[in-house]
Length: 204
Image (cartoon, rainbow, N blue to C red; front, side):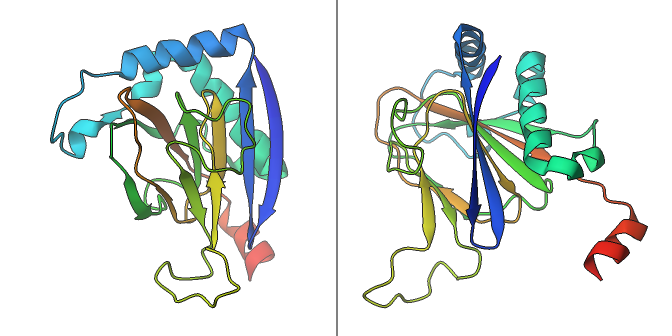
């Protein structure tokens, strides 16, 4: 499976973008979308919009995402827990959105795999439908801004097969989606288990 890689140094951390390319990738992404899709309905609860453990339906795609996470971690990949991966598909229908939150309870590194989106052929850092945003963690979302300050967020234009990887403590959200076809993305959380003696050496 072909993967196009882009790393951005943002704020105090690093964000990785990995675009899956080629017919094999397109087929696997489309197949996972079909397995995740549910008949649209009004007033779906939050739990009904989540399909937990969806990546068991696509073990090859799961391994590809894990490989991308390992690349993102660099030398730290040796501490990636090989058995842990909390994952869930999110069904996002017309006018639905995701509030600002972090996934640090579920893992140390978060990967968002988009199964749909309108961003194919567009710059990753552009406004799409829906608009996925990584927030600057050094500022509170409700802090007032001066006239010359822009919103402290990095916009991502979702495209099928695009994977965004970032530390799980980074706040992120998704603006309201407008469309008749359900947008689906998969959130995958991984753990990094650094031995205590190395934590004391590196971080103390």
